[in-house]
Image (cartoon, rainbow, N blue to C red; front, side):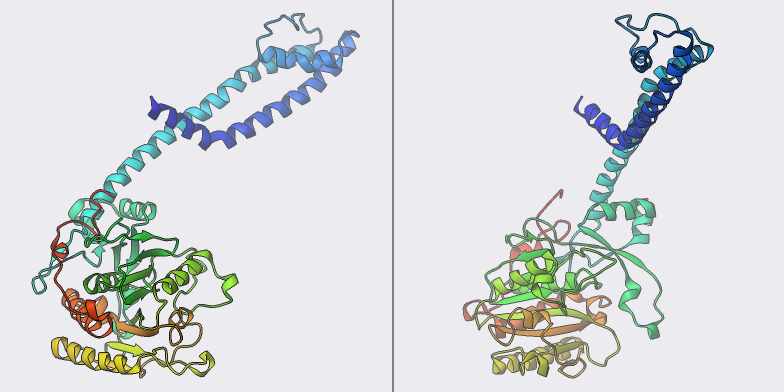
Length: 436
């Protein structure tokens, strides 16, 4: 019964505009007929007043239960108008009924489609089942699922997939060609990414959903910041697992308020009073997590595959920022960089550089906006797409990165990397939700 009422309500809401327009049209025609009726009847019957002409059609619409206009019309024009009023009396009820009937059919189709999309959502979500990495023995959600693979394996049409992605904000559509440069001759290849919008992480921390994306407070001395997760391939996936394996805080921009007028959360323009609400919330959360001078904000972003190095560290600030660098403990940072560079080179043949490939950051950078170089330590780490998107072994890389960061930048009592059994849990997506 409730379903029927809901469908009727939906049908009415979908057709109320047409019903309103039809009603106005019928009233306007009735007013015109009223004037013509008065002019015609008053000529053959002097006692026929405008009031009689006014109420005559409306009484006829209602069936004249009180026999108020029971006397027949006298003039030929009046009789013709009486016939039109009879036809319109039928239309007054038939037109809305027809519109609502049509709307009910549409509502039933929409309801059926909504149920189909709900089922497609579950099926797509299951495509992000966490996979066991043999080297680390941890389970990690896939970075992406290729759209054509979904079509082939699950018999879903392209429209089914795109409609599902459009409806549910836990998915987003990407083009892998965006993570390649022209010299690589990129080919368009649509993929789906899944967002970490579960309620809890596998290790038991709350995933707090925000207007900009998500925030996870693990009470760490390190915060991983992903201001470009909503716009760059794979960097959100990479950053999320870096925070998970290291036990770090996490702040990630997952939503774009207006895709036609995108706002950067990496380089922040304008005065704070003019910032969009999600941006204010984003910066505020980063500041809230990094109030002390011993804290480290690590801002991750992507880099094109055009350099001979894969990890690009930036901690120099330009003159306009009023700072020399965005770190407070330079000794600790240099020790960390040396160890990190050596680990990546030895284990994966990846090279690192510091303040070489990218120019110093300015006062608009999120690291400085959140207090880098003044109230906390901050640095930018741009990672090549060859690592985040195209590497066939991202999990070991992320784990080793987490170990080095944890060893050098985390609180002393939390600086030892410890295996967490929850990282081996089966399931779909990033967190613990089963059916969300």
